[in-house]
Length: 288
Image 1 (cartoon, rainbow, N blue to C red):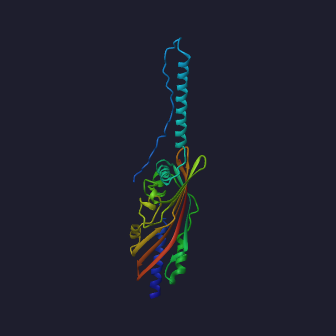
Image 2 (cartoon, rainbow, N blue to C red):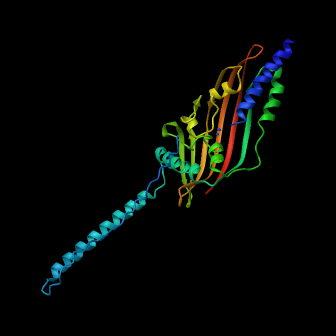
Image 3 (cartoon, one colour):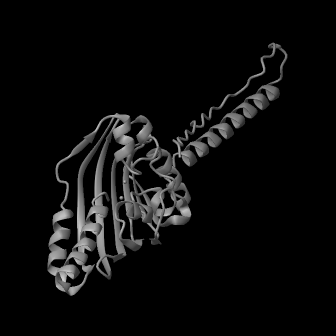
């Protein structure tokens, strides 16, 4: 009887983990638009009455001043254009571009396709009682199967509920202070943005990792599994990659990778602790 109870408790731990993590990394709309700076140069000419006795030196001086003004204005326009078209380089600039472009998805996209979702179990980080280790690994593999067939979301509500951050009106509220590394690559007609997030324990939706990824929160566990006494998560090396069309400023493709470690203590036929290392990878194509 004791062995059966212990086995049931262990299975419950893994089932709890499995049920929770299958949902994976899914306030009001904050869409910011920046009007392009329209820099133009006008050379203003004072129309004066031609006087036949105007000296050659006066004509030369007026022409010289006009040429100088035009040249200076043209140089200033060139400098402004060059500056405004430069690729974002600092973390702050990259995060700003990412946020503005990403937050247009739920407002403007007519279709979002989840091309696939990989659910990966790090078996080296799966910690369960020895008596149920084999069953635990089998259960995790069963519950953590990949989604290989594309899933299309083509209504505003479906996009809101299923695209990152699921159930929220925004896609990103990321801040530069939460970023470990940010790179923007200019590929001609497109920007490729790569963002590596800082490690965070127990993130909440709307902050840090939870401002840009789908996360599992403690309150979700309490709602779904009554016998869980303790629950914690650690998200480490979460990555976001997006492609932005330069002409429109819209995100056309996105990949989210969210590795985490789940740890929980349950009280079921005794107290037991289980943990698992998991990674979710979601690939999206966005159509406008």
